[in-house]
Each structure stands twice: as C-alpha cells, then as structure tokens.
Image (cartoon, rainbow, N blue to C red):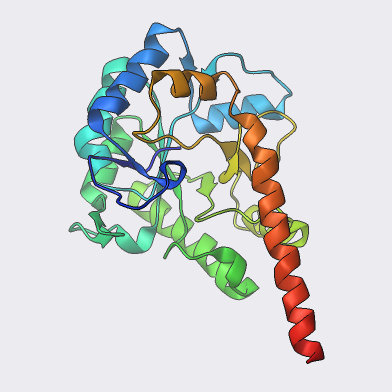
Length: 259
C-alpha cells in the first residue's frame, strides 16, 4: 500500500503513519522484488486466485491510494521498467481536467489517468470525496460508492471492479462491515482492499483484503520482513486497539445517557 511517491516532509508523523515514499526508495524496493524473483500480479488476478483457494507464494500486488500526480511523474516509469502492474485508487472529486490538490499534493488529471490506463495501469474507486464511511448514513455511503464508480467508468470507458476503503477500516464493527459488503455488491464491485494490516490470504474477505503499508522508512531489512509475513502479527494489537476504542466510546455514551 503506497500513497505518494515523493520526498514530501511529514514532520511529527510516526513512521508507521507516513504516506510518502521517496522515488529513490521506491525504485530500490521495485528492484528488490525483481532481483528476488517475486511475482507481481494485478489486484484483480490476485483476488480471483485467492477466491479459488490458491496459495500465492512470493506474489505481490502493488496499490496506490489517493491518485497523486507523483504516481505519473515518479512511479510509473519504474513500474514500466520492470513490467510490474499496479492499481491506483482515485477519489474522483479531486480528479479533473486540471490538477487539483488533495491533502496538499496535486492529483492526477483525467488525461493522465487515461494515458496510464492505456499503458496497463488499473484504476479503482477511493470514493468520491474520501470520507470516513463509518460516520455516514447508508444513503451517503451508497452515493460515494456508486457515483465514484460511474465517474471512473465514464472517463475510462471500461468496467471498474475494485475499491479501496479510505482511512482506517473499522473491522471491529461487524455489522458495519456486513452492510458495507452488501452495498459494494449492490454497486457491482468485485474486490476491495483495506488498511487492515497483513498479507492477503484465501480466508480473507475479498472486499476487505489486508495490505502492508510502505513508505520511506522501510529500509531493505524491514521491506524484506514485511514481504516474508513477519509484520503480520501486528494485526492483532491493531484490532484490539480498535476494539478497545469502540468499547470505550460505547461506555462513555451509556454513562452520558445515564447522567
């Protein structure tokens, strides 16, 4: 899971939460995949294979959230050099005919998106406005999913199958996940990725596949460890932290009502 391929400074941000990967580090990581015989496959292909119960060994899917222009200027040429596919998830409100900023960084234009699509890059929905869906009502959630998909398909002239959940995925809320899964199916999505930490397996929900966050803080040793699955254990404390926050919020709500 990449975001921006740039040297943008992120002062005060914990290394885990940083979203910038320098072009130099990104190129080193792609070379590592190539030199160590990793098979880089598309998200759609990976989801289909996982759906059959296939165990994918030394296989990697490369994704980019937020649709930043630096994918076009810094990442694509490296991917093209190695023949690696990738999926870029676009918040369609910020993709226009001229570059618009999102979180202080310019996004791709439709001209660039179409050029990348012709070169084999896949695109998926990252909603319309990049909200935390967990805080929206059902009508607004469906609008974010349906309108972003329609806008992408209208501009690309091809079907869009994939979706990336914006912000931290609330996996601790099973009812929400079940409802969201149904909405994704209604809107005719076929695969989704999330911020759940870990390597994807056939046992995972195909609409909320886990990913490994990558940024400039991932030196070769850490990058190798993440690829080998040595980072996956952090999912449990991640989940327990989310669950604890939910239980605390519920407790405070009950106490407030009682008062």
